[in-house]
Amino acid sequence: DALRSAVATHPELSLLPTEGGWSALVQCPPTRPDEERALIALDAGVLVHPGHFFDFESGCYLVVSLLCEADVFDAALPALLRAAVR
Image 1 (cartoon, rainbow, N blue to C red):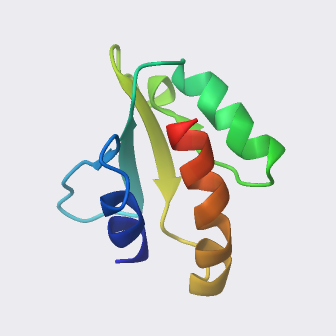
Image 2 (image 1 turned 180 degrees about the horizontal axis):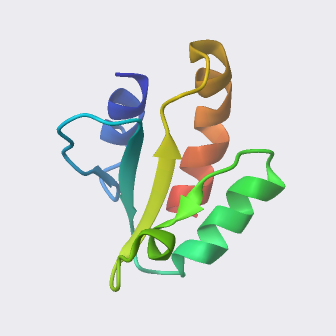
């Protein structure tokens, strides 16, 4: 819910629908490669995976784990969003 609410405040981002699982897919503007966005997040202390690790051949996606503690996830959201929209 926290990720869904945070992404909703950024019209340039979208959260792909899921049917369960432990990760979420954030679609980012194609203004820079997904790997570059993942490295921006990593520099801020947030680990996400670029979409091409999961065979997304086009577009820009960040794969976000949903398996961490809620307070850790909430603390990482601002850096994640900065990487996604930057």
